[in-house]
Amino acid sequence: MTQETGGFAALDLNPNIVAAVLATGYEEPSAIQQQSIPIILAGHDMIGQAQTGTGKTAAFALPILNKIDVSKREPQALILAPTRELALQVATAFETYAKQMPGVNVVAVYGGAPMGPQLRAIRNGAQIVVATPGRLCDHLRRDEKVLSTVQYLVLDEADEMLKLGFMDDLEVIFDAIPASRQTVLFSATLPSSIRSIAERHLREPKHVKIQSKTQTVTAIDQAHLMVHADQKIPAVLRLLEVEEFDALIAFVRTKQATLDLAAALEAKGYKAAALNGDIAQNQRERVIDSLKDGRLDIVVATDVAARGLDVPRITHVFNVDMPYDPESYVHRIGRTGRAGREGRALLLVTPRERRMLQVIERVTGQKVAEARLPNAQAVLDARIKKLTASLAPLVAEAEATHGELFDRLTADLGCSARALASALLRKATNGQALDLPSVEREQPLVPSFAPRGERTERGERSDRGGDRERRAPMPLAEGRVRCRTALGARDGIAAKNLLGAILNEGGLARDAIGRIQVRDSFSLIELPEDGLERLLTKLKDTRVAGKQLKLRRYRED
Ligand code: ADP
Ligand code: MG
View 1 (cartoon, rainbow, N blue to C red):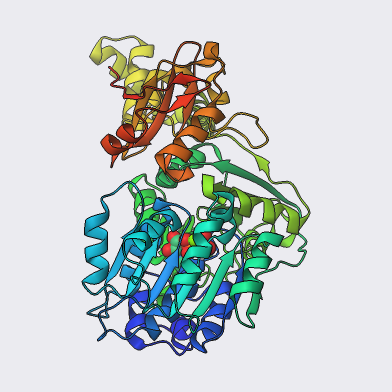
View 2 (cartoon, rainbow, N blue to C red):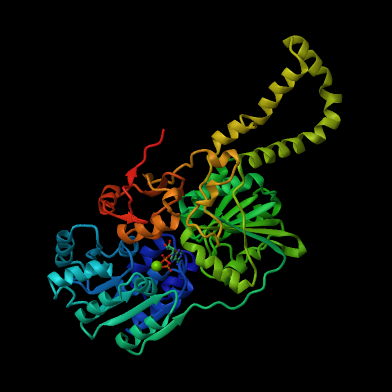
């Protein structure tokens, strides 16, 4: 173990839990974890307010795992989440954190799946139940005693649950759990409806609010790009083609991510290395020295590992994974623009992280402009520019040393000067794509999203552009398929209507739905392949703008 592991180890958690957390690659607790875990461990009710992506799941999951009695095979903790997707995420997180605690059973309970197996899993000894409120109430109607042993109740994303109309279900659930329970409520916002729930159902709750102080940012050129989580590496590779950087630091959240990105960069020929808490201190110093003197150009680091890193050569900071809070954003981007030099900071934002971007903008008092991924033409231009720059100094002097050889070779080969120069270029560029069709083939467009503030949902706008690259079929993110409906703009359909219908009637999480393209006489929607049949069955009778949706899988080519 390295010295930074003190963070989790100092929290008074069972060593098996700490070990599992460190094994997943977390290096230290986030702010909400640091503050909530001791309160929950001490048995207090709690209200936690923090944005998406601040690490709320572990903030309640770790202390709850610490509290449950593994030898008792009955429900002890109930976590309520707004959607099936979030319930599954939370259940998976619990399983990860409980990897080294044999005998812990977690069951996820949500609509759209048969009830029998869920009820059996609960009765067969699950200590932790993660549920959406609607489906849980269905179970309560069949067996009102099913929650009678629960001692810990968590409402995750309480504001979202209320927005989805689960208020009445929550009241039913509160009533079905012993009053002696400990209750913890997490929410990004605390509207009066949530406060009133807390007044009625929580006992002297402690408040934890992860609030951000205003920060000042020096002269750093900042931009953000919207990307899907699984497209981050291709997006980084593409950005590096056009960004003129000297040294660059890329921030990610986990050890594994440092290794993955550093490997992808090395494979493309960059002088890159990973920096994380697993790497011994002396080795870390060597990496930083290499970045200082140019043996390395890119370091991929976690926040912890990059602590104290001060390298004046750094011209760029890439925030590949979102920082936990605005302070850490400001801290990260402060690694560039040192000593009065210009610096540039890019932030990759996935759809569910939009709110964090807004918080960063509010706290820093600056707008972080939206940038677009460079298209194939821009990549090509950048490559030719680099090639030109590398040849320029040679053109002035190589003729004196190699001119005669050139004449001899043209004569021997019986070819034109242009033919020979072309052959030499091909050799010198070593297979690199240097014409537009080749670059396009090599770099499929990374799907991105419509800029904020657009009326339409999800990428609709990006199809109206005229350039050729945007017209090419968009590659699908892994695990997604395209579905088609015969409803389109001429039926008065907008992307947000389709999104709303699928969210409401399909029970999907927002992030599960990819791009929606509304054309005149039809629309295409990207949906998860997993569970598609069931989803389409559920949407069988759905109507949008008064017309039947009739969604079908769409097979291109
Ligand atoms: P929230 O519920 O606040 O939106 P999550 O609990 O879903 O946030 O966590 C967001 C992401 O951060 C997840 O991918 C999670 O694995 C990761 N994460 C959480 N805590 C840590 C930590 N201490 N160190 C590194 N990554 C973490
Ligand atoms: Mg969450």
